[in-house]
Amino acid sequence: MKIRMNDNYRLLEKNYLFSEVARRVACYREAHPEARVLRLSVGDVTLPLPTVVTRAMAAAVEEMASEETFRGYAPEAGYDFLLEAIRSYYLRFGVELATSEIFASDGAKSDVANLSELFGQNLVAIPDPVYPVYLDSNRMLGREVVFVPATEENDYLPGPVALEDALGHAVEGAIIYLCSPNNPTGAVYGRAGLAAWVDFARATGSLIIFDSAYEAFITGDFPHSIFEIEGAEECAIEVASLSKTAGFTGTRCSWTVVPEGLEAEGLSLNEMWLRRQTTKFNGVPYVVQRGAEAALSDEGIAECRELVAYYRENAQIIASTLEERGVAFTGGTQSPYLWLTCPGGLGSWEFFDLLLEKAQVVGTPGAGFGSFGEGHFRLTSFGSRETTIEACERLRCIL
Ligand code: MLT
Image (tube, rainbow, N blue to C red; front, side, top):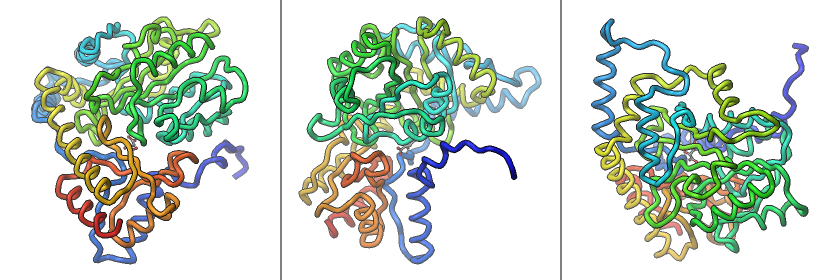
């Protein structure tokens, strides 16, 4: 062919992190067909959907079977019943949104990646380590990226000073990605930490893209939404998801909040996102939206809390194993992820190979989340109880 290609793809790792993990596991399985491999790697849930959700979805399926209640294309940003349910969910955190600021979607991953289309060539600030989609989606568009180190020294919660230090000069008009509770470290920003970012973004004309996918794991007095922080509506977009909250990893429903007042160069971000979504996305299926509405009802939230409590107990089981074996780690309390320092000074992928070969346990190498993740490793508490206990027994034998 003689077509021109997007050269930015040359800058990417050959495989997306979790695809690379899956590829290596598949190779191992091929060579050891008898091995029983246990996965504590990708953050995929194992418990079934809450009953209130499946009941609502079953009723919606029935509606689709009758001419009177059948639905075709959904309203582009979501049915009113879902947008209202999301709006009420935010009221629990004291955040008042207009439904016109909420856009239902099929996943936080796609939204967080697609949002980068709205912007021109700005400086992009990405914590390191962090969810790889932020970096890869910006690299695909040839964006200049500065990494903000999230290390033990700053409790894995870098602030604006860390960004300015990394950049070596003052910031103006940057796109700043934040994820709290953090994937992969499990660190969670307090109000003061988030307020520092909001103040900084306002002072420098920057925009924060806040990923709250893990907010349901918060137990203490930490913000669930960036809009709990004064002034955030002037400088932030939030991406949220039911994947980890309500077990929707395979069902797919998320949302993005784009405040009405956000604008730059005379363009409204809310209008742009609506334009983008209406052009490139046909909405979340009706049946799924009914399930999502149910997940956000009082009964749904109560059932979701039980799911989260189960994964939290898994995290405790993993944490006590690591403590017992003297492995340094963080996370696992406000988050489903435990972030450990690879024992014996091993590199992330070396430790990955060791665990796979000696214990047939799969985790995620910290280096896949950024260069500051090297020498670290992530374990997830999203496995079944049985898998978690057995994986811990195996870890005990080799650590
Ligand atoms: C993870 O393991 O980091 C997440 O499951 C990835 C995702 O949510 O896309």
